[in-house]
Amino acid sequence: MKKWTFGLVAGLMLLLPLTLATTTTTTASAATKTTTTKTKPKTKAKKHYLIVMGHGAGDPGARGNGTTEAAFLRKHMLPQLRKYAKEVKNSEITFYNPKKNLVSDTLYHHKGSYKINKKTTVIMFHLDAPAGHGGHVIIHKKHPTARDKRLAKVIKKYVGLNRAYNGYSFRTNLRNCNVLRKRGIDYSLVESGFITNKTDVKHLKKHMAKIAKADIEAITNEKIK
Ligand SMILES: [Zn+2]
Image 1 (cartoon, helix red, strand yellow):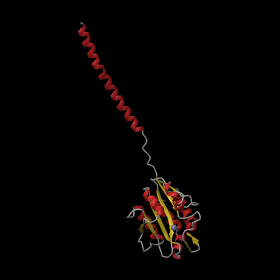
Image 2 (cartoon, rainbow, N blue to C red; image 1 turned 30 degrees about the vertical axis):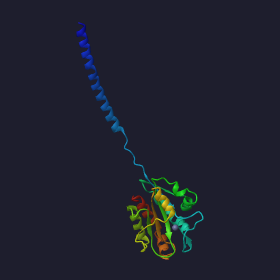
Image 3 (cartoon, rainbow, N blue to C red; image 1 turned 90 degrees about the horizontal axis):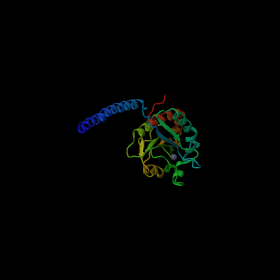
Image 4 (cartoon, protein in one colour; image 1 turned 90 degrees about the vertical axis):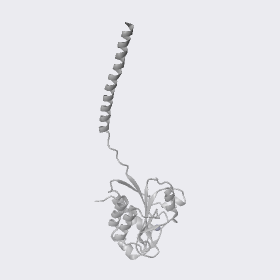
């Protein structure tokens, strides 16, 4: 009698967890399904670009055609770049304080390029001197990136390319750029033309809005309406 009771109870006890387990599994999978459909799609983080107008903070840069590199870049180019930088959707563009000088901040104060986030891409704008015509892109690796190629195309279209470089120059003797390179930060340095060349400056002034728009598109690989 005792043995039989034990057998029955034991049998029931064996069956019970199975039934319970099945129910639990079904509920769990149903819950998972609901959770999955309710999860929001992840929004991709925007790519950050830092645009730097060359020189400034007491350093005029090159001189020509009655102006200086620092003044021309800030007066003519910066407002247009800012305007189109607001139009892009998938990128975040910020500007290095135009009252400051990235190179001296970096080399004399150990700030500037040392403080830039490693995921940021840095785009520096300059004008060339002393004599010549056309622009080029100073690149951070031996071969131009797709972005470098797009930037060179803009120069070619509106000002013309410097024949000495045919679009690109890979340099390892620019100390500020080397700080970026050593920190693994991606960059392009755009020489948009010669400040000493009358025709280059004329073209830069005449097409500045189009150049700035095309440069922002080239940097971000986004189309602006
Ligand atoms: Zn310069």
